[in-house]
Image 1 (cartoon, rainbow, N blue to C red):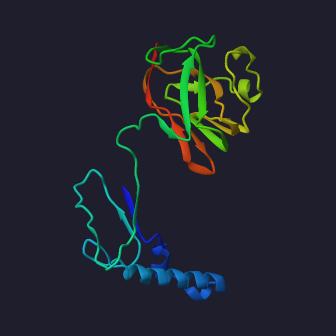
Image 2 (cartoon, rainbow, N blue to C red):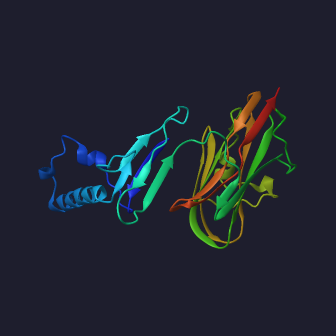
Image 3 (spheres, rainbow, N blue to C red):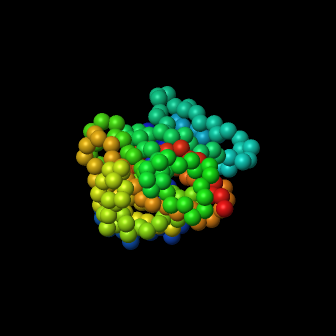
Length: 244
């Protein structure tokens, strides 16, 4: 886990400022002004009264912490005479898959036969062709450029991508698939860019084929606003089994 701490909403690229080969004389006037301002903010950070494990920081705090080890807790204290705002940002990989959910959107993934009958992924015969239907529901009217990302479980591959690239989905007349700005049929996932300006749900569909027997993890599908990444949603992850 990587942890960054910043005080008073002031965050600096301390690593760059501390580089021994960093020569401000090589910068233009505007860059010099920015560097001077950054140095002033570092000094200001020292004067906040903030301490990390009892020591005054000489810049932003960036720590790499392994969740599998017994690292001691980080003690952050304000020894000054006025309140100081602290922001802690963490990055990491969840130890367990996150449940379905979203902010601004919901997304649902279903599998059917080519005739529209529901399919249980717990027992898919090898060679079977299935239709993947992704349904995205906005929470109220949205105007966004969305990216839909649907990773495939191992053992499946996208079948005949030209069917959707050419817009010929007449055989799937029970699917109301919308036009995309761009669609990619990769070996491990389906990607689609959609411009959506409505509060109505929309669907995307493509066809996969079960090609290898076994039990496979099925990663979650997701939708994300490309310019407002906090507006996003995901399905639950699952399992898929292909039988001989």
